[in-house]
Image 1: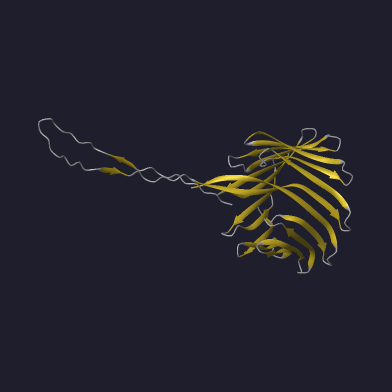
Image 2: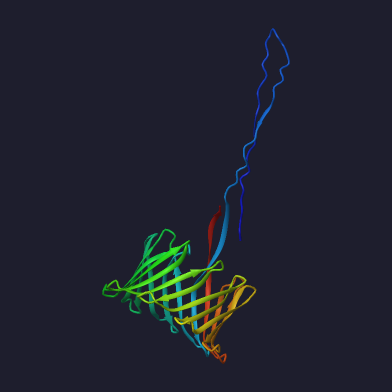
Length: 287
């Protein structure tokens, strides 16, 4: 929903008065000057409703509950603070806690069921809240890997992964078209193409995601179907085009997938996810 408000300008009118003398009386015609101020508008306020998941429940194909994740956010609903994984008996299995020291850095820590530290990530953000570096450590504070990200026009363009010694392990390139992300290339440490993904859109909606090896031979693919602009089915296909897996989506009236069903090629349900959402308002101003 977009709400707009306007400031109406006041028109100021200045008057020049008349003068007269006791000895000489005459009519003085005074021209009225009207000064009209420019009408100034306040920036148009735009209110956007953002939905975010707060609980994801997983069920086996036979309908038996498997596990569920509870996600907790800050008061404004914009920062994810904790992810807690529970089993079907409501016992905590694992938790991931995010702490933000300032607007440009955070630490994401993973604990086991007993609260013992398993690993953690130090995350550095830019002024636009884009992740520009991640450092992963084990529970003994030993560096495991480093990820670095670059952006162009606000879009992620390069992702590089290094080992604990700083040696480059891989590079991923993101290439865009007018429709959106169009190609993803995975490069070896020496700069050779190892594999790539081509992403195709139809009427602005993601239509296909095709995976190729370095020789341009298709390895697998995904195709997407929509209803009323909302994603309702995703097909995962083998290299020969046969269906490997189906993913069916049931959406609420705002397009949030509230149920996700994973099936094999024979339509046998393997897993079902139920997702609950809450919402928050994001306010911006039209330039």
